[in-house]
Image 1 (cartoon, helix red, strand yellow):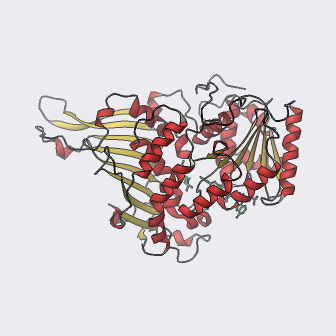
Image 2 (image 1 turned 90 degrees about the vertical axis):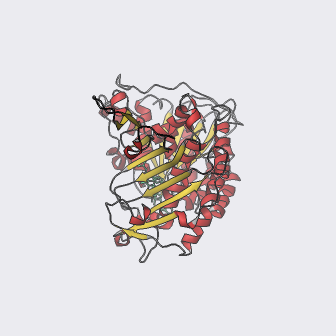
Image 3 (image 1 turned 45 degrees about the horizontal axis):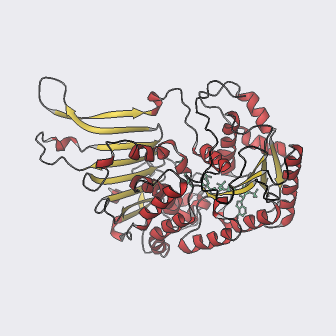
Length: 495
Ligand SMILES: NC(=O)C1=CN([C@@H]2O[C@H](COP(=O)(O)OP(=O)(O)OC[C@H]3O[C@@H](n4cnc5c(N)ncnc54)[C@H](OP(=O)(O)O)[C@@H]3O)[C@@H](O)[C@H]2O)C=CC1
Ligand SMILES: O=C1O[C@H](COP(=O)(O)O)[C@@H](O)[C@H](O)[C@H]1O
């Protein structure tokens, strides 16, 4: 099943302190993965493909795992398999054995139809899971049950209630029940806290995995290594040397059939409050005591708590021309599809350094990157300012890369300078490596009980505290979104 060409290192089982009450949790044994909202967009595009890739690499074993799709849509097992089949595609290094693996994987999937807020469907689901556990000779209570909520957040409370009531792992003989919830987790501080309270009454924090898929991206995971395992970054990473840091997300397509969802949230809730802010935390945080999830998340919370209120004059919003033509978008909507803003961190390291966050849909390119711009060289004898500053760029996607823009001597007899690049492009440097999809890593982390790359409750609260005042002013119509042309760089006013 596992092709020799897979070159991702299989990670050894790991345990960590985040599983507070689950010290004797098995890493092996019967595993039931339930994808709620299996009929939806995320499930077919991301969740099932991630599970398939884990299966192909041997992280999900046929003799242990069973996957249940759950939703209201009335379809058969075979119809669900047909819906997702086209999304389970091989990457360039994994073509060999793909068809056989696909057939075997699809046989591990069963569909259960039911509503989200009544017991019948969940009782049926529990029966199916229990049958699978018995079939696998699983000792009652030692099984592992993972519930992935690929659903709109509005249904999280009833779904969690029903899981708690009908579908929990039956006793505490070392098994576990974990739930994965997607963003957006709330619309503002109050609604997020309400949701946290509702779910918190049903599940303990170590059972709740708030996913932010940007935390599963290769170069986001590299940030801590880069910063804290390299001597030459440490002394430079501060207000004395850095002029500004830009964290940018661009998409070259619009709402793409998701206008109904998007219009309720807008670009700040969809991208900035979660994905870009998580990246900011990893760029700005202090060195954690260790790599334990709680130590890392403690440092992230400190950064978030040090962010000062966003100034209105440092915000630009935009909406692309044609957004309102999407039939699922309400007439006259002011929802921003583009936003740029400055975040300022009031601490010893970052006082005075603007963190410029920018995100937009329907722009000129698809790209996510971090640009660290350094200050000018004091007393520059080469007068090299006109060639540009030192800049360190981390491109998260597409084509993962890190490069350093620096001034060098123009080769030749003349003593003149030119800007050049030291380039680490992953496509060239790691040609035989298939970089895992973010969801793949994060689902594996959930199975292993590693919460390092998931958002803790206090982190979420601190994130909403930063954006809620601005979002409320936007919701009240106090900000207008400036028009911009699809395929452009955003509104001209955004610079
Ligand atoms: N799609 C994406 O690219 C991304 C999505 N997310 C998040 O993942 C979650 C799921 O997203 P996505 O798959 O796009 O969502 P969908 O709109 O496709 O919904 C998923 C499923 O939920 C059910 N559903 C939809 N609306 C409702 C409703 N109002 N009440 C009850 N059930 C409903 C439907 O299943 P049925 O009717 O069969 O029960 C649907 O197939 C959301 O929280 C989203 O924000 C996060 C990142 C990216
Ligand atoms: O969470 C979301 O992310 C996607 C972009 O994800 P990426 O991994 O392709 O960068 C975005 O399109 C979507 O609107 C948003 O909900």
